Length: 202
Length: 85
Image (cartoon, rainbow over the protein chains, first blue to last red):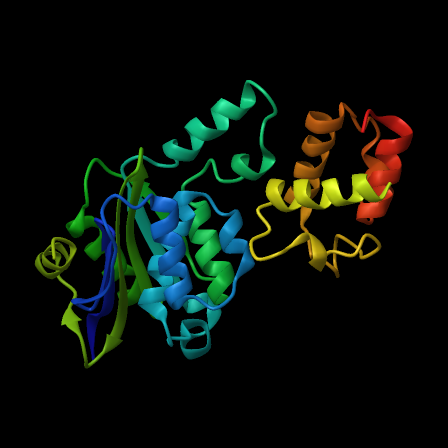
């Protein structure tokens, strides 16, 4: 068996692609809130907590729903054997700014809980009953080599049997999400820096 | 009291982003936490903000929260007794 990218999902420019196929395209002038709600309605099972999430978490959550659709990783590998490895550029700055704006009046507890970027990992873990290692990094841009090496090491050293790699960036209505599932199996795209970069720029 | 209960239902749905819940879905005597609407600890904090922002009520003793926020009716009764509804 090889360490491979078994599936991937890209969300950008109001378009969602799963394993290279476009599954949703909406008009560019649609507000992000409406776009992501449409995407949620299209795929996710009823999960009312979605509506309480900030935009960054909604983006990550929807991408994970498309990525994992019928894949019950926690059951397949054991909850503690599934890891999440995420990164972005702007951390949770989008929500930090929104929260800061409420501080002048009445600070919003519901916004405050999202003023950390790794909360999106928690949301995905709760949804999918994942209890494995998670890590979040901040980079100026997508770092295929780092993420590829980190995921490879997790699997090679038996710290994980499956890894979800995620680049989920959102700031000032600009967003970009790329998630991929790394597993040891015979079917998929070999996990290499080049392949990761290629899929990211799809 | 009925008017305040109706107003509270709308405010709570809005403040807590209770998507897909309409005022008619909420009985004034249903528990808000655990069963019923299934609210969580962050929702409780949002309810405290709602009372302060809309009714000028500060809950000084957190231990009172459980009783005040038990149901929509108990919130309405607390506002009637303590605020400017």
